[in-house]
Length: 200
Image 1 (cartoon, one colour):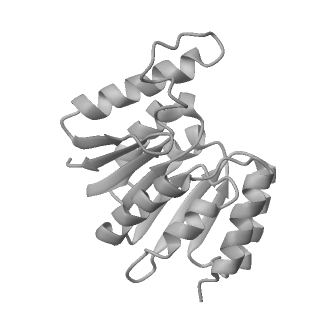
Image 2: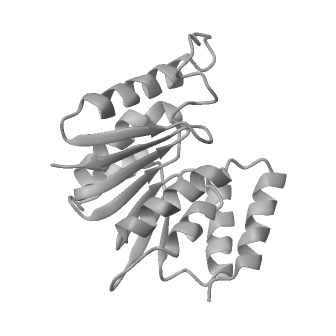
């Protein structure tokens, strides 16, 4: 049984600790996509405390339905494991503690996932996109959060501190617009959500 009280506590603790989790309006949009897609397998890049994966698990359908989620930070992975266990979702959510930029290329799971959700290091979104296209099924959906990077991406932002990440996110948006395998839209809610349907 999905326990909303435990989930609320996970959200509350994340916000108190300033852990970046999905904003409510972005989460609502993504859950709507999942409810339409009815995914059997989801790949998540960037677990944080497990809040999004736990929410997504409600929309898994079919036999052996599963989420694989990857987290680079050990402390976050440990918290996420505890949160997933507290919800009784260890069988549905597989957590991998690894650097996704290296781990993804080792995955021999071409055309396996119905949905790929990207919410990790902004400067690596191009790497994640390339692997997402390889790993996702034809007709699958790639969802990327924070693509506007607090307004920097669509402004004339060029300061040194976030220049590389900002430029790579601009490139991400350009690629998903121009790549013939992708039918994409940018939804300007939260910190920007990009949704791409893959037609290989």
